[in-house]
Length: 359
Ligand code: CP3
Image 1: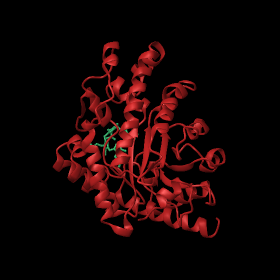
Image 2: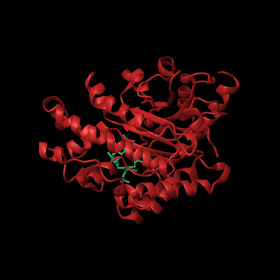
Image 3: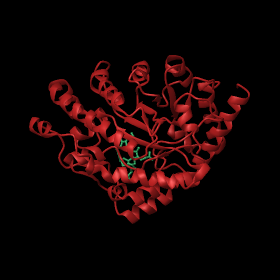
């Protein structure tokens, strides 16, 4: 197996810098759009282990990526709680039953993990498909939304520009939000552990919206609950360490506190300088990131230049530090697929050079 991704997360030496991309299986790939059309809807695709496996493998067939990520969505958990998830064509996610009053919050429960069996079945099927690649097999990443990011969708009922509904609850009825977050944290920990038991070899918590919170509110309403989740995760499974990654988009101010959750790696968006992040937490955690996804709209030469800047900003890779290359957020659906070839090849090339020459 190609294990450079797992080794980098555990800050062990690697021959070059491993790379994968958030949303690497998605609409920028014509073969993804074809499978999605066959499935009929995004949820039908995610709920079919065979089709979820097929789209998970698509980017690996095109690019020399060092990890696969389970094809699913963070909103499967609130869907299993009975909130009624749907994705309208061309629009974002919607919940038929958002949490709008005290009675709805009181009725919320940790879902029976059996309702998410299709996710664990997909994990098993993907592990089988990866194993069939022999030496070229790469590790599989499982994931979940953070308790707070899930709550954003559960309370708003969908995406939001200003998070007015959940922030109204946060300031006026913090007790209700804390109850939602407590349930979400239990659900997320059980969900990630079940993915690990099904075969996920690393797990990532996506805190896409933690960065919209005020100083103080971030710590109480997002970070504290992610810490609870991380502390409940299986540290080892089947005799192997299962590394965890925590990514708060917009969390650059709070890196030391994120590192203190006990995670193995911290995801960084493009606003953070990797060298400075390394000086702050690089002795405790590996770093994952952080090219601006929009750099992929430049020419292949320009992409190579931007990749070199990210790798050089991390600096010479010595034992005890780890860098996993990624984008600072999900890849845009408008990305030309050839741009990703340039990116992946440049990461492996500059990653080897920074190890060989120290520059
Ligand atoms: O990274 C991967 O390749 C794995 C798959 C994955 C998806 N969603 C598939 C998806 C992952 C890791 C996610 C996480 C996710 N989902 C997050 C956290 C990361 C982030 O991007 O911030 C969030 C906030 C969601 C919620 C969500 N799902 C939204 C807001 C949308 C609609 C907006 C959009 O980009 O389309 C989705 C739908 C979704 N999830 C798609 C994919 C490939 C597109 C749906 C389609 O095929 O039409």
